[in-house]
Image 1 (cartoon, rainbow, N blue to C red):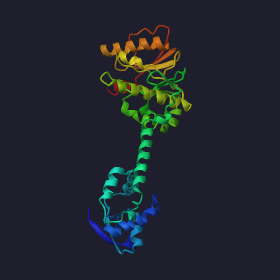
Image 2: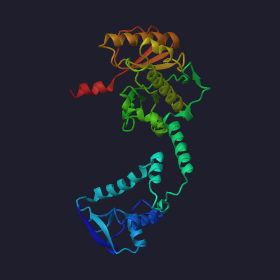
Image 3: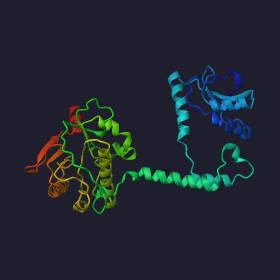
Image 4: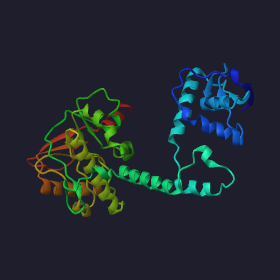
Length: 341
């Protein structure tokens, strides 16, 4: 990249620049006075600013004649618009590591950092940091959503109300945002990474899920080699999301998940009795050990919850459900794979 000095009057601000940052002009001007113009302004071949509107205003306030620039003449019009937005958006994402910031400020003794807006007292820094971290912790664990008056069992699994509804079909959560077919329910019988986001931002998906007939609770994985604490956590997360979705008026069918018999101590807690439940047969047909675990879990589920109806995602297996109504749903992923084979 070549840095070219251009006259300030040659540079043209972008008329539709959506980022307004006038409050920072004085701070940027102070930085230029203290350290020099160390970050060039990026312009296009017509001298229209792509990135650096605040630096331009700061330069004008200092009555500079020449400023360093980089001419991004290798970008097309669409790339220029995208870069302008991306450059501003990245700035929004930066956060301070307050303890490290405090250590760095302590090492600066000959420069007045208040000129750059570092004027908060040390105690306030740490109080703000601790408060922000507390909010971050509460949000990341959805702690505000937990209601101890609506939970069950030693591990306080959130309870889900019965919903005796049968969707016409089921599609995966990973297709929920793009599917044109809304006459179906949403399932989570997909890899966890494809729906972890509903735990991280549950309310972001409520309205989109509302467009469908119903939604199953997330099927967070229970692997045999997982620590038991992780299995408990994943069951808890499934129950809490289900309860939250019901609280927002969605039809919610509980997904029942289990692993080895030790998980029976908690994996059925919070589920409604004499209701419609959902299970999956994915991965159990060809594996005798997996099928044994699956069969033991179904036996226990029927014994404890006496379901009226079971919605089963995947193909049929050799199991007698007796007088319980059962509806099978095809695994569309394997169907699509067969269709392209």
